[in-house]
Length: 156
Image (cartoon, rainbow, N blue to C red; front, side, top):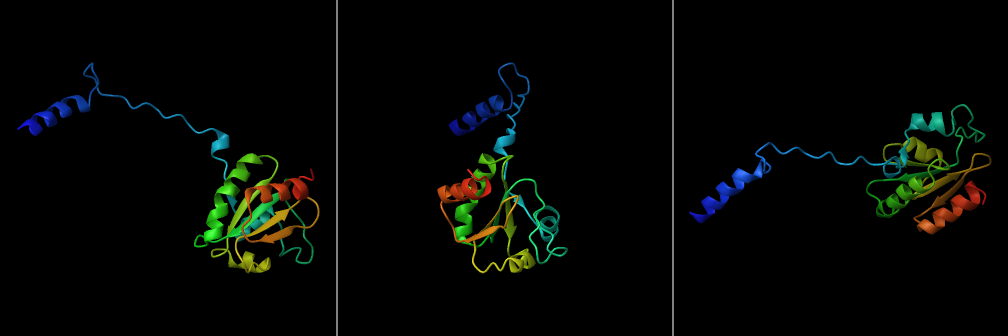
């Protein structure tokens, strides 16, 4: 009997505020732009459009972007890839407007992986605006990625 009374009391106060009017849900604050910055996922076609069209220039690296880039070749099942995923997200936020961070899923984009002869993942391609790109295989620390970005891409 006492459980029934408690239940009735909860019902009478649960859906209304003290004035007896229906409660209004308060709008949650929206995320700022810097909170939603994430690496961009590339497909075969977006790679050709935004990075390098190797179909038109198969012998020469012709970088098409106005910012240097970091391209993470990864797979969802790869533990080291999952380990560096938060690092790539942090780099995307930290270098917003200065360096673009991209991801390529090697299981979905096998042709891109073969163009770069990716045999071990994660493999990360660092591309300056001018000059040749540099590939690094294996997971590294955030500090190591920052050092390469600063020294090789931003030339600091």
